[in-house]
Image (cartoon, rainbow, N blue to C red; front, side, top):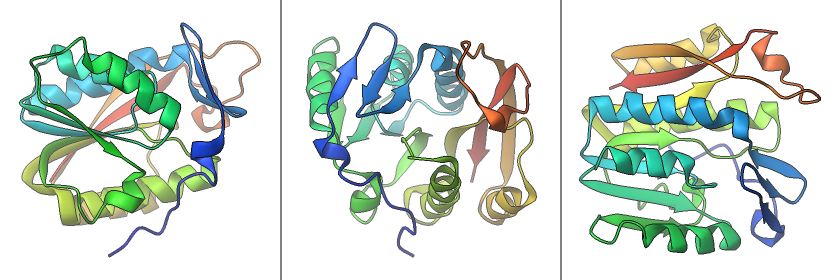
Length: 210
């Protein structure tokens, strides 16, 4: 099975702008400060399950990568496709000189056939819109179970809606034996619309175990 989803077109050619709290690539808000508690919760869930080899999909500002490193995993692989973000990654790794951290340059879709099996996966790529995000998430959940995880391996991702729909549940329970969720309180800044949350003040950190 090959990926059905695709990364954002011309992503590598769009300029990246970092602030102390946000990352924009082109006009895309890739990482926002309100997501921090969600990233931390996902990393903590995953690393409570395993501190072996971890694959992180998307580096962003390094928020989740730093949290994962606080748990001292045996090995940490990170996919990232944007050249300016890769520069930030290279600076970030200097903080962890004795750790086994490896960059896999490119989108996960372009690397899926060469990625190694791992004990845990932190999945947080950027998708251009809600429909693309749904396809990419379901796509990766299946492919991770088929290619990247052995029995007992785990995958974490976030879900903005307070409920996981039946279609996604069907995919999950076709490939995984356990699904745990944690409600994480988040504060959406004024002017930022997030219809998937249905007005709820929390999102879900999800952990799947194969």
